[in-house]
Image (cartoon, helix red, strand yellow):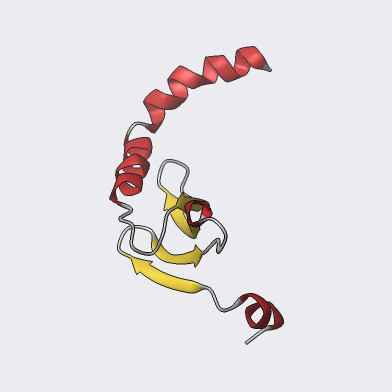
Length: 90
């Protein structure tokens, strides 16, 4: 146990079939600020990305899984639409 774990407590880890190991970070003052951190491969870029998901231990993350899959599945369409907006701005 490290000093950080001693002071703040050991974080809870859960396993999710889609997101893998998820670290739960609880906000003791406001449960709506609690969230999960995880890392997952983003298929369109073939890179590991970090993901933060608002929620609590009892919450389902199915909506977040569906959203992530939708972004991956429609990535080329999304980038085609937003690229001109970004390029025009910069």
